[in-house]
Amino acid sequence: MNKSVVRMMLSFCAVAGLLLVPSIQAERIRDLTTVLGVRENALIGYGLVVGLDGTGDQTTQTPFTTQSLRNMLSQLGVTVPTGTNMQLKNVAAVMVTAKLPAFARSGQKIDVVVSSLGSAKSLRGGTLLMTPLKGVDNQVYALAQGNILVSGSSAQVGGNRVQVNQLNGGRISGGAIVERSVPADFSGENIITLQLNNDDFSLAQQISDAINHHFGRRSALPLDSRTINVAVPQDGPGKVRFLANLQNIPITLGPTDAVVVINSRTGSVVMNQDIVLGSCAVAHGQLTVEVNQTYKVSQPNTPFGGGSTVVVPDTVINARNEGGSLQKIDAGANLNDVVSALNGIGATPNDLMAILQSMQSAGCLNAKLEIN
Image (cartoon, rainbow, N blue to C red; front, side):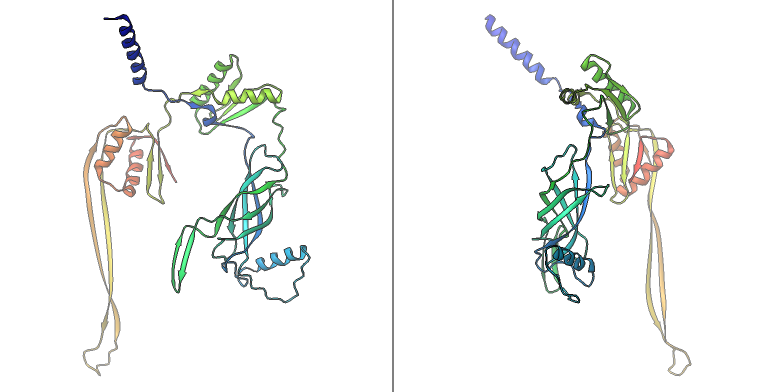
């Protein structure tokens, strides 16, 4: 066989072998941690929305809307005569919220959320007037103003009404301009603190080892299951470059805690991949109690018998217990086995919540059970 053909076949086999090898997905440090102090700050403000199509606040139910409009008009040089009964169908009082990003500077635009405070039926088509947004220190950090985008819609004819989504709240993209930045001494610190998104001693040690190995020196020191101190350069540009390289270090995640999350309000049950189920026997029944009550009219047999007509309740109670057969559940080492075993019981999600709680109490569910 020709040598060139042999080389081509060997090269093809090598490439095919690389394609068949499963790629190992690794998380980055930026996805697993946050830098202490680099966070958003909540802003809040009170304002007025005008230009509504008759869907604003009712002045009799929300007197603060009228008071706010009087104050605003007085600042603009308009005096409303005393005793004037203003019918403000096109005005609504609203609360405006926003998040001030870390290292935000004056002139930067941020999004705001506008929510009705009074009895307005809809904010669709309204315009938010200039509203100062304050922080927890009662200082103004941004000014919001603009047209509100409401995703909902409604139609009403007579007593019939159809509504899609929520009409009493909306957003203004880039609707606030930052007027004041939050003081932050980021460049003057020589140690930063990384906070893990979840408590994990092994992951904290793994991240510290990866940082020290990447930079070739002892830079990171884990303090507990969530906190890691990292020594960084003193100068600002060097610190930014150091953090940029640090946050892109790949971390191959190991086994995590087995967790079962139950939402008692919606009946949702969520399990992660590390659930281990021990052998057990489960018997689950459904006790149903039905109460049917009707009313009967009892009258005297004779017109002048001296009795009276009364209403007598007739109550019938039926109780039945369905199911309850004892079923064996084999031990499962992966999520597929656990799902198959629990599906074999034939229980509904609401029944499954009670079964999982009992299984954990019996010691055959090796996982943390979180109930929301």
